[in-house]
Length: 153
Image (cartoon, rainbow, N blue to C red; front, side, top):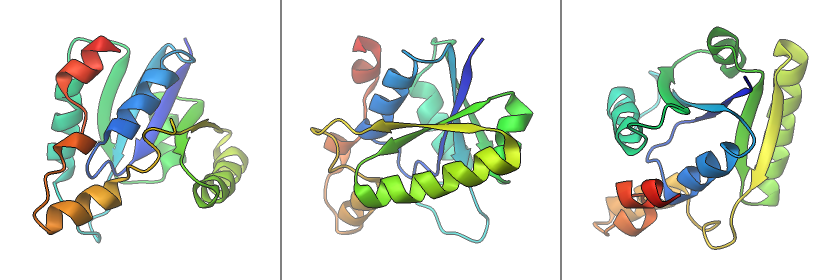
């Protein structure tokens, strides 16, 4: 069974993230969404709340598991038995960052990184944008996936 980890802070989990999970499931038998947290960072939601939000979206889909972690991504991958990390890439700066991290993860942990380019219709969506809009009182629901979105995929 080919298992991949899709890791990030997912603060919040956006339509772009859901699109990456959907597409990763065409390449891998199982995708583990790894919700990273660092106790020294401030998040919109706790790790448990982020995990629960994503779990609700994928309830009933045994191909998707959602777990929190607070250590190195390669250690998380080793613990869950994933030999691949899936990353979404929206821009050249995303690509350069993920390329560097992918090289470290491959050399240190033997874990390969697979980059999926963002759907052009979703490439403008980021968790940072969602948090900024929410901070200024704007409705961010158009940026977030719904159960209906996930079920029709």
